Image (cartoon, rainbow, N blue to C red; front, top):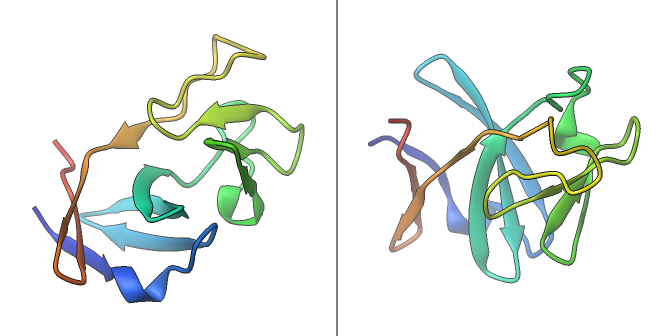
Length: 99
């Protein structure tokens, strides 16, 4: 499992886009919990780097679809699911399990 970033690089409610093993991933810090999600909206491919982080979800900047950070589900449009990956923190290292 690759180290993709440092915890100190992502402030609270902040995001950081990384690429590892050919996969673009958006890391999101929600009150100290780091989530790893795909970097584009599954609806129309809008980049999520500009998405708003709030109350446990990520809101797509294009159409406002809200994706739960914990599982990628979208209550507004259940057919669209944002891919997520497990994250582990070791010291300051953020490790994403791409399996």
